[in-house]
Image (cartoon, rainbow, N blue to C red; front, side, top):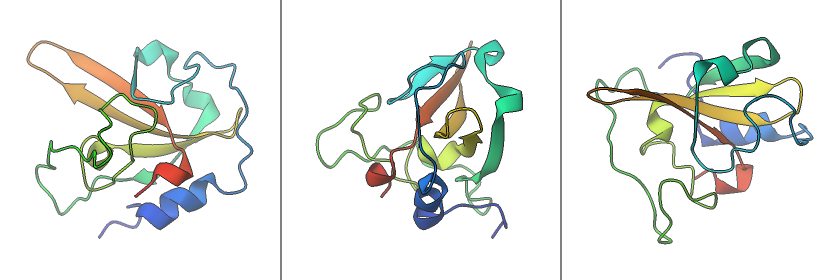
Length: 125
């Protein structure tokens, strides 16, 4: 087990005490999984907290977790760490707005799509 592997409790804890405010960075609002270009990533303003990707799992599942009928991009979809896309994410803290963010890159046959979502600790399962 990697020392920077975050579980649900650690991810929720990362949100505690951080007063999230509307950010003025180029990411803007990201309550669901939002696409962004690398030039919009606020690199100097974010600190990597750890990963949700278990290094013991060679190929994380692509199965999603939506017991309440939500969909991938739904802002109210649960953040289930053992399911896609959380199982391929790194977690970051924005030093400008206080948000905790999840980021992963989706690779298709002919494209690369960077995705980001703000963490709502109530949705972490």
